[in-house]
Amino acid sequence: HHIVEVRDLAHTYADGTAAVRGISFRIHHGESVAVIGANGAGKSTLLLHLNGTLTPQSGTVRIGDFPLTKETLRDIRRTVGMIFQDPDDQLFMPTVAEDVAFGPLNLGLPADEVEIRVQRALARVGIEHLRARPPYKLSGGEKRAVSIATVLAMSPDILVMDEPSANLDPRARRMLIALLAGFQHTKIIATHDLDLVLDLCPRTIVLHEGRVMADGPTAAIFTDD
Ligand code: ADP
Ligand code: ADP
Image (cartoon, rainbow, N blue to C red):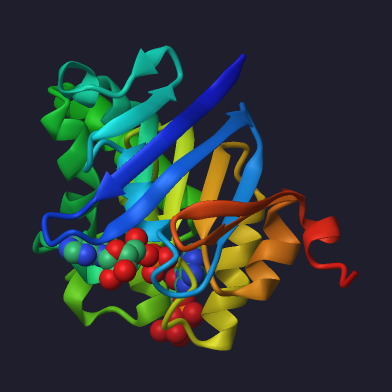
């Protein structure tokens, strides 16, 4: 049974840009998959379908047991944790702890359960010491860590990331890779960062002009022949 199934997905933006032109793939529970391709290949558009930000115009997306429709959006958003390229898009509360608590509170969880989740998520990314700090004053690496904690606090099965290592200094980038390597979650990572692909993703999907140009073992994708 696959945790993600995308079938014949196509998406054309309102201005007529055909960003995704018939994409199909399936992902097993626990797999880590890189999605690579030039700018404009359709990576972000595909990812936005995996957490329900976009719903299919044509084709289907199934996450766990749920076909992606307007009715299942809530279930999909609980199953899929989306980490956006720019942490500033995800952090907006006065303190780190409040940012991490925001999602669980929105689920309607009781305060003590929320606090447990906040502590666990902060510990998981090693930033308990930042809990009372205002997110906007943190370094890029620290903001990235907080954005990951906000997602972990929702207990997602799947982590979807759009360029998670963008704008990180080398040390923060290494920490990010080590951190993600320790997660058992199913991971889908759109990136231009070759180290991230080689270190974290045994499988790579290559997009080109809205289509899957290659899909297979990362080692095979990066072998010239
Ligand atoms: P990638 O993430 O691989 O760079 P995108 O999914 O962002 O690819 O973009 C695919 C194509 O869709 C590009 O031609 C891009 O310019 C276009 N596109 C992306 N978002 C929009 C939008 N909101 N409206 C119109 N065109 C868009
Ligand atoms: P700075 O660049 O401001 O010195 P550090 O790299 O020292 O920030 O990180 C501060 C804390 O944030 C570290 O203790 C580490 O646990 C956490 N951290 C930083 N970057 C990341 C990252 N990319 N992923 C996870 N945790 C991170």
